[in-house]
Image (cartoon, rainbow, N blue to C red):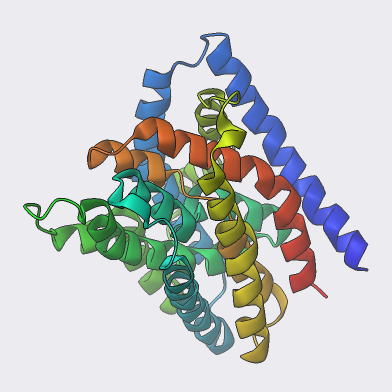
Amino acid sequence: MFWDNVLTAGTQVLILYIIVFLGFLAERLNVYSEKTAKATTNFLFYFITPAVIINAFLSTEFTREKALSYGTAFLCGVATHVGAILLSAPFFRRGKHPDNAVYKYAAVYANMGYMALPLAEAVVGPEGVFYCSAGVITFNIFSFTHGVWLMESDDKDKKFNIKSLILNPGVLSVMVGLPLFLFSVKLPIIIQKPISYMASMNTPLAMIILGTYISKADFKTIFKDTRLFGVLFLKLIAVPLLMFGIFKLAGVSGALLTSVLISASSPSASNTVMFSAKYGKNTRTASKIVSFVTFFSILTMPIIIALSRL
């Protein structure tokens, strides 16, 4: 049964990576340029991801058990980020190099929006997206607080803007979708259908953009950077296994366990590149990390997902 689950999850990951390869190929053939990818990323971030989250709420029938499960998924997301922060704390501190913040951010923050959501939809279905949306909101809370502090820790002149904690697409879309779920609101078809169509664009666009990131990686020198293996170990092995043990002890099981572990085992967030650009860090280093860890996640994620389904 374990290997059946590995095969099932591995097949879903491979399906997604076929789309990633198309993004890689399109960038290399100059069909889909880096400038276009950046514009598409903004469109995905501000429009499509909120549609995915709201659609997940609309697609899930309200029950007391579902509401409690969503609260549990939220707490699992908090635990995942706290665990990742604590595990990564002793690493990437040598020499106070500015790239240390990039490596540490990549070790803590997972691709919960662009990797976990489509994979949860493929493996678990709408219920998986529903649970993973709780991980997206915890990601935004931690990323726009601890993550910003991490990126700005070598610049004491910058101050954290609390508006970014609330006024971001992940938080706002949950604030819209959660009441619709709690009060069993049925939107008119003329509104619901566009949201559903927009949500269906998430998986292909996210994977194509990811392919463009990978196409920029310097594969000639990528294996010479030992810090990459540190990020890989923390992000793909240590954090997921720690969370698996904690969640099992806490009694989390079924689709909920699979969903929160998909989030916990996802590779480094593509936000690593965007945050690096925004806060003046090395975007080449960030792209290299995301590409490297994402590539190896095709081997680790199916195993973690299979463990969750035993």
